[in-house]
Length: 130
Image 1 (tube, rainbow, N blue to C red):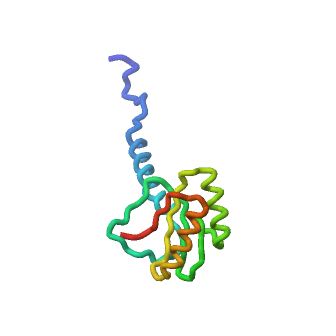
Image 2: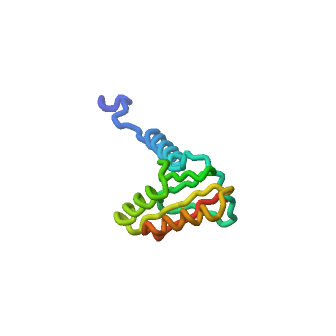
Image 3: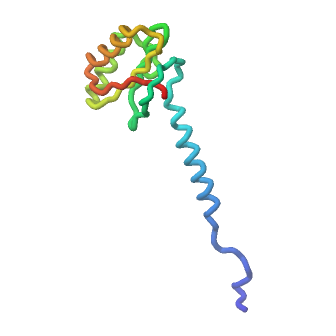
């Protein structure tokens, strides 16, 4: 029997560390979805064909009182146009998701959609819940 073979472990078992890292990765991936959601309380209408977007978009929210929010910042219609025009010049393929309260009159939603289009944004989606 050799004197160097005394039963001491000379290597490190990395399997538990890999397991912990994979669990942390899954936790971060799941919670990242909740971080991007809007903090505004909007009663979205239901749609049978609602789907989630593959790429992130700018969110425009029209709450039940008719107040406009661009990415959780309150703006008026002119501020919305100016911000979206700047973003569409920087990125012509910018996506905008409009979340309007279901109790709002149709003309208000159409007015905001028209302003978004006037700002040069061509990719607009309406938010709904399934």
